[in-house]
Length: 312
Image (cartoon, rainbow, N blue to C red; front, side, top):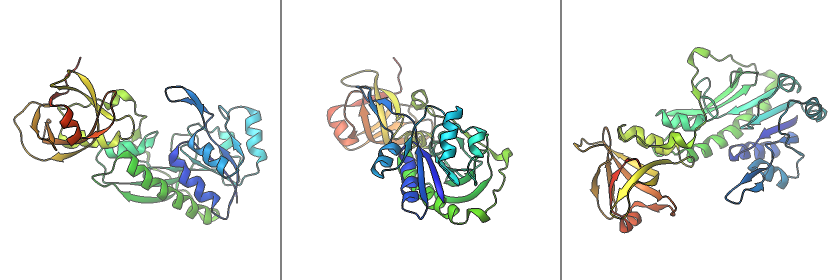
């Protein structure tokens, strides 16, 4: 079939590659316009545009899809289906109904659980043991369309948002190809809206750690917020007070303690145990504001932590 693809971030890359390597014909790639990036705010192309350039595909990156001219351009591509994966823009009804088979969304959760912008992070944050991908027939709602296919994926205790992202990107690529193979014979299954949960977009304010929570909850936050926005806390040591410390990885030690949340329980060259509301958290990889990432052994060689969680 003639396929339009719409996506922007890294999650979309495996899906675009799978479409290019399939028997289908990618007649156009939609992505977000170039944006300023980095300290120098240099105008940069998104991952999907870079990959599409490498494949010599037709690229379109309008600011929005609302204008009649933009919609006519899409219609003139003559696609039979549009595949969407983390595109980042709403599709008007007129576009949803333009291709013969409409628009299919590759969503990184088992719908109706975790509709919205950050399903991978919220699945880890909630302590879910299983997630997956859903191939959904798009409608005008937020991830509310009927589902054509679901494929599941276990969430390991060590999975971060990055590692789970990588698993689901591969799963999504395989799933969309499977759906396209039999699309004329598939019928979408309506979602049960009563079971819907929403995964709001995360921001840096969400990243602050509350040491009064359990070690398990904090560890889920650390995993869910890696690689963005990275869980953080204020830290005090022998050399500074109340500097921001980012925690990239840790592990849970299920044991009772009688210290206050945020207190350092055990500090050796290779370990740093922190008291929480329930259990201990063993820090593994950290990053002090303005410094490079380091494992806890190297960090302990430079600093002696005395307290976490104090505010300025």
